[in-house]
Image (cartoon, rainbow, N blue to C red):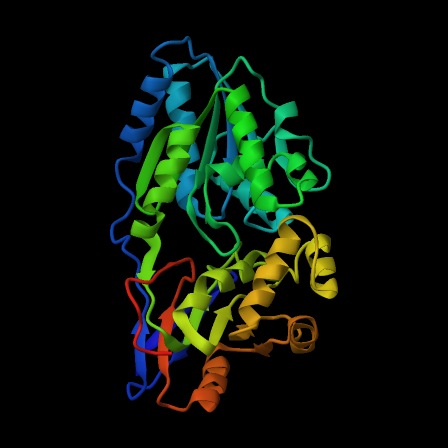
Length: 369
């Protein structure tokens, strides 16, 4: 009997599906580990220092919880200090895709393990952070380091979101996406901004604008999975720190919805040990709407719920999930599967994505309705 394993907090959990049931494991096109990172960073710094005396760098690191982008940060800092032993590295950090406190703690532990001897000058988060513009020294190049990937609200999360969300001015805009575009354009026009970005198994480096555009253009190649119109999809939320709260996990519904037919079931495996999420998110959940990213997230989730069923394997109280969103809660993925088979019978068509960070791609019209 095939079994599928999901990261669940700092542990793992699994589901077994009988061979009699139609099933398919969702696989990404990223098949090889990241290679050539040292050479790519070396080339990037050579290009950056070609027409200037590069004695200092400013780095904005948006931490997504993955070790690959953290390793990219390590290589950048070590390579720069090797070229300039007396050079100065000014580090700022954020974790917009994670719970802010969980992100700060996870990044601090990661920096300590890497033994870089570096502490962020500022950890940017909503509510009490200064604007990124108040922290940048215009005379020093700014390098944005992060990973690019699919996102259930933004479509893609790249340098643009990492930079713009670090400016509280985004909250001044009624339309979140227009605000992000305008803030991004203003920052690029005013500052000397560069980017280093992991996209699947590839590292991009260059001007921030070029890297952002290139990253978006290859996200489908790296994370794209052809839509299969299944009855059920069961997907993992990535484990700790990505699945620490409902807020940091549930955007995945926006990516997974296209994989199931109308009336189909999306099963998400996310521990949510740290609860629902931010106060703004909880308020938007309770009201059914809200401002900024939290309001947009709630709106997207409600849109999915209009045509799909949703079930969650987590530590959250089942009554809270049902009262706030009308979704089913289960203790294990196996219980979730049993619920799905009761709905659709053993003739159901099932997809399993052990990591739900996928980009749905529809190649042509489907024969199923």
